[in-house]
Amino acid sequence: MLLFLKTLTALFLVLYSLFILRYFKKHAEQKRGYTPVLIAAVGINTACFFVCRQFRAHAYLDIAILTVLSVIEFKLLYRMRAKQAFYACGLYVSHLVWARGMTTALFAPAFSQNGRLTLDTDLAYYAAFAAAVLAAFLLDLLVSRRLLPADKLKTLFRDEKQLLFVTVCRFSLIVYLLLIDSGRYHVTHMWFTLTAIASFILGLLAMGHLLVNALRVSVLTEYERHARLLQEQLTRQLRHYQSYAEFTESYRSFKHDYRDMMASIKSLLRNRENQKAIQLIDDIYNTLQKNPLVYKSYSNHIVLDAVLQDTANAAEERHIAFSATVYIPENTALTDLNMIRVFTNITNNAIEACLKLPECDRRIEITSGGDEDWTFIEISNPFNGELSMRDGVLETTKGSGEGHGIGIKIVRELLENVGGLIRIEP
Image (cartoon, rainbow, N blue to C red; front, side):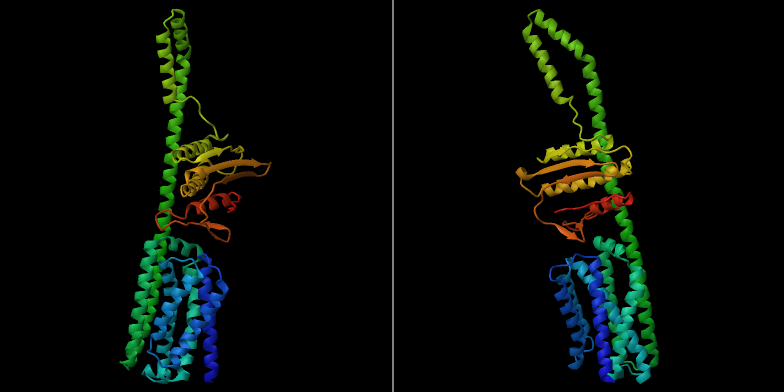
């Protein structure tokens, strides 16, 4: 019977570890050699509990060891930042702590009112522990996945403040539950066991409520970032439209006065007042330099042309060679506003990539083509070789500041919502 319980416990531990470690594959970019590290991690985590039990280590030494191991494992398996790795570790460990405390408390009356008996007897220990791992697995499968679907967890991962807050609270809950559970070694009354069970249940509910609120805050924060980014983009386009209006007015004024200026120059030359004629020509030239009458067009679409003109100005300021020829059909599914958002995000990324290179290597080229059904637009720029890709999706290589990592996400959503595609080729 004991051998059966040990085998069952090991099987449940393997499945639970495999399930948890692979769950974050959806949320973080995996590293090279993922599968061997995953197999080793599952084996080490499973062996940890059996070794600690074999040597009769301190009651919670296995949890401490698992905490350290799992942080290292998440860092080796995925390209996680420290906060993300600790969050993943906290999720892994807290479910085990909660489930083991609950099942130990529930099993204690079956063997004795003293919870110590449950841990001192191998048969009872492995029976309770197998049930605990199964409970942790079901908790993660039925509850956590509904509270924390993949898209929401990615949003939480991008919000450093909320991620830190949730992680600290989760580890605080782990310490609290371990303290409550350890009290059963000193208090043998049934009322304490019932109090411990109530504490575990309330702790779980509190953590779930906190997590839901943290996700809500993260979603609202990201929405605010999107709104701020959109406002910045619209401000840029408004600035360009104003400059275009000024150019148009300047051109009309110059055209109105052009004949009179030419007539004045001819009159001065006929009267041999060459110096005055030269001075007038110089004045005309200086006026043209201050208010250029050549407006370069990059697209047949006035809104997109404004975006590209603004990009050209930004590129010139940063010594980036820029060229663009874009044709947009009249019946495009993208609204003017979404077209601004798509091209502004992509060209901003292109400029940021170029700024990491020497001036001689900086360039941005935009070309287009198409047929009756599709319009193809290609934006190419050099980069410094640092690129983070996951399942064909470009991920930010920047830090954790506001707005980082959401540009490509916005572009992909806007294009796919109208039946379009985005393809990134490093």
